[in-house]
Length: 319
Figure (cartoon, rainbow, N blue to C red):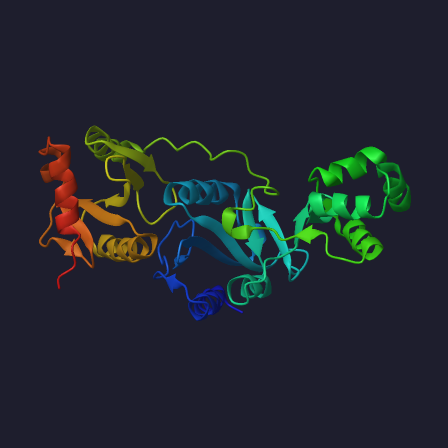
């Protein structure tokens, strides 16, 4: 299956599941392919046939964008170089959860969260330590007795009850022993923090030389500006006074810039942000809801509220 067809299939699956999906980010470089929202859940999805192509720089960018936009970064893929991705298993690459299409279908369409995740050394599950402790105590077993039955140390059993995750084999043995479910699902939509590889959100990259003027003006206006490297927009700018994000881009207004502005508008609708494109010369006020503001016009504005109002006005779609 071609990557384009795979993106189309994943998009159709999300729409069937009730998500609103943005236009595909058909530009390069790109850290994600589509944004998708259902209610409060916002996803930034990268779709790949071979997930080994998902590199560290893209993973860092997706995690940063997830933090700025209150979104969950997710990769949907078919295989690694060596094997197919197993259904019902969450994998991780560079701190981002990776799902097979079948696992994504179960999660987003059927509402079944995966129970198993892959980590160095094999496949693991989340043990519900409180349930395990209750079951053990109901039987009158000591920690040592359960440890003996499992063939592990007493300290290991204590860690299971404190929330340490277990291999699939141990979990199956426990569930067979107590004749009930002891596992809890991996909460992918909350970032799977309890099992992800990631550390805190990576630091912002430094703005490129030609971005510094725009970043300076936006910062002066009271925005907290987060430069990007591989997104279809140059920055995510947080307006601390209104708690509203703005996606920004800038360049000469070429056909490529117009295409980028349309994609920004589509992403903005899904992510519930505004979008603005700063250009050298503009012959109209917006592109599908992405406001166009000339750089000279931007730099002449001293009043932060005036800039905010300009961005809002330019971004209004005609009735």
